[in-house]
Each structure stands twice: as structure tokens, then as C-alpha cells.
Amino acid sequence: MDRISVRTLFFGVYGELAARREGSAELAADSTVGDLVETLRGPGGLDWLPERVVVAVNHSYAEAGTTLSDGDEVALIPPVAGG
Amino acid sequence: MDRISVRTLFFGVYGELAARREGSAELAADSTVGDLVETLRGPGGLDWLPERVVVAVNHSYAEAGTTLSDGDEVALIPPVAGG
Amino acid sequence: MSKAANGRVRTWITRESLDDFAQFEDIVREIGSVEDGALLFFQGRVRRTNRGRAVSRLAYDAYGEMAERELSAICHEALERFDVGSVAAAHRVGDLGLGEVSVAIAVTSAHRDDGYRASRWIIETIKVRLPIWKHEHYEDGESHWVGAPAMEAEAPAGAARFE
Amino acid sequence: MSKAANGRVRTWITRESLDDFAQFEDIVREIGSVEDGALLFFQGRVRRTNRGRAVSRLAYDAYGEMAERELSAICHEALERFDVGSVAAAHRVGDLGLGEVSVAIAVTSAHRDDGYRASRWIIETIKVRLPIWKHEHYEDGESHWVGAPAMEAEAPAGAARFE
Image 1 (cartoon, rainbow over the protein chains, first blue to last red):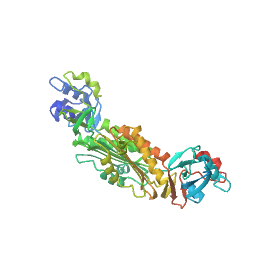
Image 2: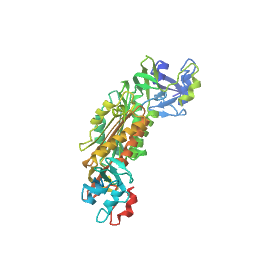
Image 3: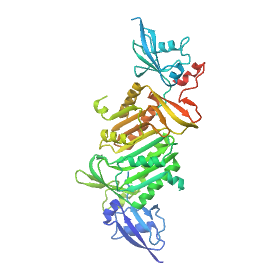
Image 4: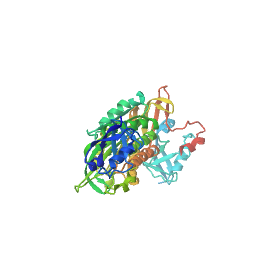
């Protein structure tokens, strides 16, 4: 497979700024979390997204270097404020 | 008044060792808490009572030098163990 | 996690009220033990005043599945870090009014020092790890995502604040 | 103590069960406020094992009037020492079985740090100031006044241990 597709989720203020809670992105196979963020921030995209945004892949916090797989659920996590 | 009379209370292990919960003592006027303890520890008395036992007078912790008045309630307080 | 450990932990994320003490009392009776000499029960509540502003209500947004998973992981980690007997914790999501309970944590332990330390560690860890976001609504009609920096076109300058 | 301070403190010494959370829930609802973002509820319970011995039951002896007075004084002092909104505390006396609650403390505060610190300070202070004595009964039939040194004819040698 040359390309993979991942599901993207935007929570809290990111959802508001992105004007959507969910989306999807197409990436080259072996793309990383960092590559996805770069793509999302790209021309005409979510240019307000911080470069080192916190991300979770399939419900676990992930590093920028984590490799993505087709069908992954990738959530963009603004500063948490539970409690 | 030459003599005063105080009520004495023995709690916890002191009550068990003294074989009584309550008693009374006659003392010279202007006697202190320390004088009372000395009297109680005297010949034929509660010789197991520590010299510097914790004492409360009328429901408040008191020093050895506190002067007693006629009718005071004096409690001998073993190491506390609430909670 | 071992089954034994799971039997001493109960966690959930819910839209239902967490205000009643009784649900935690019941759980503690079930997962606590007669070797526990201390119980610590913490509630976080919606406070009227936050950073000097009058709050009218809160809305909690959550990444539900991940929040469930993280809350459970945090409480199991507490069992390993501290000498505690049982841990129950729940976090509310959705709309909350003033005085309502947003988070509740019950910890039982043989000795009180472990209970106080574990309870505190759990709430502090929830506040940095649980994927939940608080949208504060104020009496003056404004609202704000707590923790979110003001975002301008030149947002990347503020990126460091997100780390 | 000011009247206002008294209105935020509730203390009692009792022979009745303190096991139920509900009585503290009711008091907190009454003396707490919507400015309190945190509630800390502590229970001390009769633990089966103490210093390696199997406890069968406890009997608490108390200097009733003084214990009432000291417990109230301790809780009012907590109001002055810590930034807390309300304090409720009760201590049980008489005979207690395993698992029963001997002491319970509820503290509300604007911020959780004050609540944790005040709750801890109150229980530690109770343990050194409240005129209450614990008589532990063990499964082997023996019993012991907790904190009391073994007393011999030459007791004065042990006096320092009482200070």
C-alpha cells in the first residue's frame, strides 16, 4: 500500500478552531505523527496548530516519531483541563 | 480558706492502675498542679504515676505551675490515642 | 494488570451526577477491606469564582474512550506506586452547574499517609493526563476553553505553551 | 471564636455509628459554599491488624467534655491556619467492631491544596491533643491500652515516655 488513510479527531478548542470534530487525512505509507501534523498545518490548513501538538494514536499518547498505520485514529489533544 | 479540695479524674490506663475513675484531694491553698501530682504519688499512693504526667484543669491542658482553686476538676491524662 | 488489581479498582466517565456520596460509599464497601484503616474521599466541584471571574456553568468535552482508558491506567498505577487497598475514581462530562461534582476519588489504605499521598497523586495526574477539556461560561456571557492560550494568526509563537 | 467561624464548623463526640457518609454529606451541604471547589472526607476505621496483632475489637475511653472542647478548638484553629471554607469532624467513643469508623473529618475549600493540608493537619492534631484512649482487644484474648508503656514498680524511669 503506497498511501494510508487515518481518522483525525479534534477536541476542545481545536474542534472549535478547526470547525469540525472529525476528519480524515491521506498520507504516504510509513508516515509519522509528525508528518501528519505537518500536513494538517500546511497551506490552507490548520496553521494555528502548534508544531509540537500533543497527539494520541488509538487512545494512547504518542510521540512525533510514531509511525502511523492505515485506519489509525489520531486525536489532536489541546491542553487538558479535567478535574 | 487554708485548704482546698479538688476533684481528680483518672482516664484510660490510669483509671485501671488507680482502680478508680474519680477521687478527690485536699491541698493547701495556692497549691499547684505539680503539688497535687506529688501528693498523689506520695506514700501509699499512685507511685507508678510519672512525675511529669499530663494534666488538664477544668477541661484545658495545664502546666505543672498552674495554681489550683477549690472545686477544680483535675484530670490525669495518659498518652492519648484517638483517631 | 492482574485480575486481583482490577478487583480493587473501579473507574468511569459519566454524564450522570457524581454529587451523591452514596455511590462511592457502596463501592468502597465492595472493594475495600477490613485491613484498611483509612478512607480518603475527594470531590472536585464547580466553583463560582475562577481566576476572579464569576462562573455560571461549565461544559466538559472529553475523548471518551481514551479518558476511560487513562483514568483506569492512572488508578492502577496508583495501586503500584502507593500502599493502598482500593481506588475508585469517576469524572463527569457534559454540562455542569455551580456546586456540582466534576471528579470524585475514593482511596482506602491500611495507613492514612499512603491514602493522602495516593489521593493527591491521582487528582494531580488526572489534571495532566486525562483527555478532558473544560469550557467555562461566565456570568457576563463570555466563555473560554480553560488552558487554551489565546490564538492569533501568528499562533506558532505560542506553541511552546502547549508542550 | 467569631460567630461566622462557628457557623462553618461542626464537631461532636458520639457513641453512635459514624459509618454512614450521609451525615457528613448533609453537613457539608449546610456549612459548605459554592465558593468551595474541593471537598476532602477522611475516615479512620478499626483495622484488623495493628502492629502485627489481630485485633478483635476496640474500646475508646474519653474525657467527654474536654474532648468536645478540644475537637472544636482544633477545627476552629484549622479555619485560621488554612484557607478552608468549612470543617466538620466527629470522634466515636465506646465499643467498636472491625471496619467501624472511629473518626471522620470533612473539609471544604476553594482550592484542593488547602483541603488536603487542613484535613491532614486536623487528623494529626487529633492524635496528639484529643483526650481519648484506645483499648485494643486481640483475637488471642489479651488487651492493651494503646500508647501506655508497660508499667512496673520502678515506673518513674519510664516517665520521660509520657511527656
